[in-house]
Length: 145
Image (cartoon, rainbow, N blue to C red; front, side, top):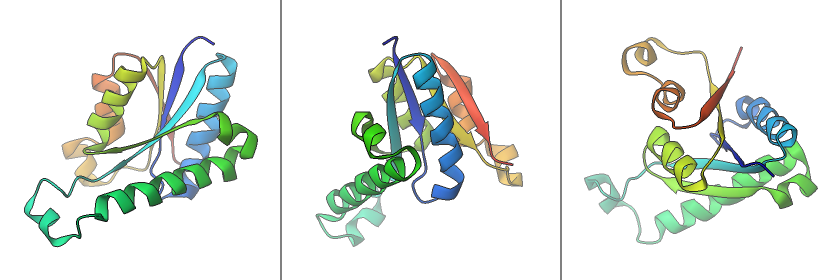
């Protein structure tokens, strides 16, 4: 095994993320690397918004998201592959969490999807472009057509 391939997914858009996951699995297999899949929850707890949620909201959201991530991997790659995948659920800003997990995992490659950009993405920069600009390892961007 020569490293870790980290695949960042948005579980709320499984139809768009399936090709990203398939490509990440393919690249991990080619490199005999471990496949880690991750998704990121928004951090509502540090703002005024967090006070409107019940105390156990985040724990429940994390558990549901972890299950959705596992279900997506199993649906796309199969149960056997899902059992070998490391599932990561982080909380915060997407690009910051992807970069942090990649650094901690010592990832050799990040695979992330990039969907058709809206005008606001050209001005602010989508998560994929921020990951590309700031990553310490190679990044493979799967383009949604």
